[in-house]
Structures are given as C-alpha cells and as structure tokens.
Image 1 (cartoon, rainbow, N blue to C red):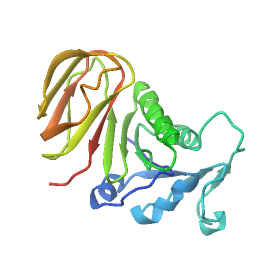
Image 2: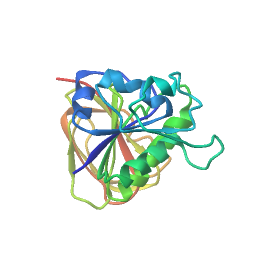
Image 3: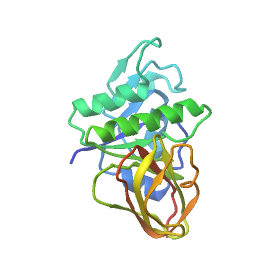
Image 4: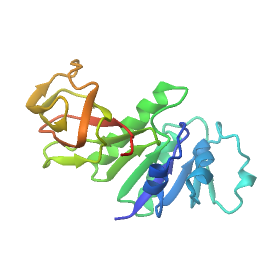
Length: 212
C-alpha cells in the first residue's frame, strides 16, 4: 500500500502521534499546506496550488517541484493534490490540516473529498493532531478504530443511515436506522477501541485524538 500525506492549509498540532502517522509516507503539499512540512519532518515531492494563501515564497523550497494553477478553477488545491497523489500510485491518503481553520466551507469540502476518494476504494484518514476522522464504508464488515478510553467521537451523517452498529462506546447502537436530521450519533464516548459497522448510507467518524 502506497500512502501519501496530503498537506492542507488548516491548522495542525504536530503531536507525536501525528508525526508517527505521517512518518515514512510520500507527501504532496497544497498551497499553504507546505507550512506544515517542517513541523512533521516531511519533504514534499510536489507543491501544487494557485498560491493565494501561502505565506512562504516558492523560492523557500527550491528542491520541491511546483505546479501552479489559476485562482479561477473548478477544483480546490487539495483536490488537485489528491489527484496528483493518485497519479503517482497512491492507494491510501492521510489528509493533514483538513478539519479546522478560519473558513468552515474549506473543512466541509475536505470531508466531501474524503468521502469521494474512500468510495473509490482508497484508504482515507483525516488527522490534524487534535482530531481524527475516517469515512465509514457501508456494507462492509465492522471496522475497529483506535480510539483511547474517554475520547469523544461523533458519526457525521451525510445521508440517512441504516444498519448502524457501534460497540465499545458509552452509548452503543445495534443495527439502527438514523435519519439524516437526527443528532443521535453526536458526542459519544469511547471506552477503548470502537467497532463500527454501517449497512447503508454515507458518514464519517470524527474523534478526539487522545493518547493513552
């Protein structure tokens, strides 16, 4: 499995866990996402974007190839970076800097991208040092997520859900239907690793990143 770190422009906390998750991965930076490279000990093999948000001059990274795109375009810089990674053989993506920031629409678009590429069969994780997220694969066997005891987590719904099972949590569920407008899956608490199965629907597990 070829895992790429995609550096996006949202804030990160370069914790030991985040650095460990990124270690040994190939890396592509999207615009201001390159600002995270040094903190994570990464050397991007490509830097893409319209460069309307980075505070670093491109000359600061003379060893990193650059691909420049117009500001007026129908793709985000993050989307361009992900497609570049796939073109280089990516089968797994770690999206760093995807979850927070001054504009909520940027975080929302990154969640949509995570869902899109997971639906295409890539292994996708979002991690910024404070929160971790994983798209849930409907119709597949239950998956266990490495949450620490006491970590808060939610299932973010993008459709109605069916057959949702949660084990290893303060509020377990057993093959329930959850309408899109329900907040039933908001603010649960892990008792340790959490097992989730989803029969049908589109959702992301978003969890507090805590070390034991």
